Amino acid sequence: MFPTPDLNAARQRIEAAYRPELVRDAGHRLIDAMADYLVRVQACEGVVLPWRAPPDNVREAAGFLDKSKSPDAPCGELAEYFSQIVRTMLQRCHNLHDPRYIGHQVPAPVPLGGLFDAVGSLTNQVMAIYDMGPWSTAVECAMVDALGQRIGWPAGQFSGLVTHGGSIANLTALLTARNVQLPGAWEAGIPSGGRPPVMLVQADAHYSVSRSAGVLGLGTNQVVRVGLDARRRMDPQQLDDCLRRLRADNQPIVAVTACACATPIGAFDPLDQIAEVCRRHEVWLHVDAAHGGSACLSARHRHLVRGLDQADSVIWDAHKMLFVPGLCAFVFYREGRHRFETFRQEAPYLFDPAAPGLAEYDSGLRTLECTKRAAAFGLWGVWSLFGERLFTDLVDVTFELGQVLYGKLQAAPDFTPLHDPQCNIVVFRYTPEYAQGFSAERLGQFQLALRRHLIESGQFYIVSTNIDRIGALRVTIINPLTTPDHLDQLLDAIRRSGEKVREATD
Ligand SMILES: *Cc1c(COP(=O)(O)O)cnc(C)c1O
Image (cartoon, rainbow, N blue to C red):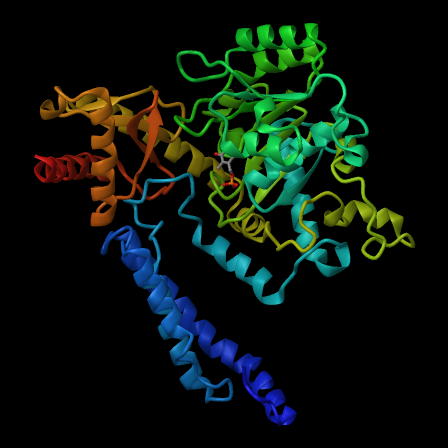
């Protein structure tokens, strides 16, 4: 804490920090640093993940806090120091634009998307009510309309919103389903008499779905996992049997959650068949299309989401397969009227009864967030600049690479693909001759150990998963600059890491 005897001096320091000329000078340097960064990273010049133990990074970050300059230092000096700080940030970050980054379902975003987002950050166009973010609200409405129509719904009949990520999107949609299916639950809570309500989910569904059951007061024990077929897709017959049993027992049902696609191996549920079953039993169908919703934009892959338009609610992450920076996720309701069922509260200081027509544009009535960032600027900006075609290209190229990698794994005697990929998520094991005698458990541990070695070496970034409780390697090709050559290099890098792990454990 500083003593502040002189408020005039305080005011001068503040004005100095807000100098537009400082933004101009620092901004030019920022753009240069970021463009230099992309040149280096996209050419694979360094490592993918600059691995360091967390405390080392924390110590360095904390060190910066004590090295600041006074805001009234000369502009040039501050701009120079600003660019030094930025260059450290760029050196320490995980390099998603390196084509050897093929790990989690987080894309190397279209770079200009980040710059459109920066406009929202600098001007702070947060919303809750229309007045605070007139253009960010307009942009969101335009994107909800455009994407909802790509799902296949007629304009004007559906509704949607943007929220901070797929997990909150699932929670929001399932809260709406709960309120519609259990009238009175919003005000009175879950009724304690009678049979407790259940929620059905695809057995591989993302953890945010069962977590929602906990948050919504249903209880995670009330989550019923519906069995999968041999390709890990929800089996409509098992769903039908399950719903019939529950109905016969008079068990209240909040929703069925299907996946397009599920995270472990990217399996797309047969949505048209599932929708038919749900219609017959009159239950709410929610589809988690966080990753695969973007197949709607691809003539080649649209068949994967056939039936998506029959869902009651859908979520779709733009910060995955629409290749924009986080966080930007969409919730859709097929019947537009459901949008006000989520939160039935009134917040009179926010929403102006003198202009009731504007409530439609006050995003806070429909979102968990009150203050919410202008999350769709990146998506709207990239679409406005390059057109829808770029998104189609991104989906087509990355999904195709999933098949290319699958082909290479099949052709390599020392690798075992675990499925025929439906999209850009590919799961496999490294199974060289020396691992033939390993127990299943040891083989799984071997995958995890070699993946650790691989990512800490910085040569590639991939992730691991468990398939039937045994460790496996998992790749999401979500950097569109990855090429088949990089995938050949991946197999070689895995072989080298496998050898190192073997030497270390022998
Ligand atoms: C990524 C993902 C989520 C979670 O979304 P976040 O944006 O990370 O919160 C939920 N469901 C599926 C199927 C996903 O792929």
